[in-house]
Image (cartoon, rainbow, N blue to C red):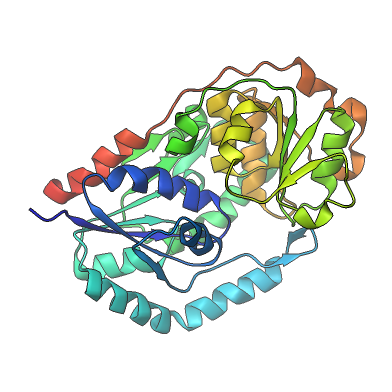
Length: 348
């Protein structure tokens, strides 16, 4: 009997969407054939894995200016994507017709759910962004609540309202549904993480992201511990005491073994850090208020400290990290969400 065919639309901005989707895809492949439609960073991620059923489509992305989001340019890019929407839909539809999927899934990717609805194919949205549009976020500060209200219409445009949603985040205990949801679950953790046992080998791990620049490295320097940096290879000559490695192979093992993680405030990486109980210093990206929400809850769950103003970074501002002892949060909701997806094959 042939395996059912799934089509998975993955937002191409950053690696968080790709890592979350891959946590599900590597499990779904046991029971089904999964085709991925994506763009940008996510396309490069799955290409690097040599994934056999990978298809390139158009996608929406943030435009960076220096070390912050250029919202004017980002909105212009979004309008251009919408203006050429029929072209993007035609390309994605042509791919769809060759695949003829039984079920569609989207991780904040706008083309796949629209084609699924048009073809009356069961579809499910699984992402982190829907916590903003569909949940009351407990204790959220006023400024971030205003952002939540402002960004909700865009989130609901990306994935049409009629598509059922699963919210996945590293802080589900702070999410109260205010609109209909299929489920609120904790992190979706890939097997590269779950197969490892955490240790503390006394080094700082930096997940370097160009938009945040050398402020991540400066924070590591203040901690006065051996430091391993993933990414930023072009800076190795400026930081000769640090060990630089390219993003990718070996990062999971380094995360399991580090003493302290320094990183941007991305949901998926914070979920992996919480899974291991790693003390974390995160830098929410300027202009990226979703990362501000993540940073706020990172502190609420006792995982670490957020650096809100890197210009004011001083050695004493990092002292708090040494007193933290986060408890590993061995929550991995992959199997629960996989069963929700497979139920669509029989229940629709």
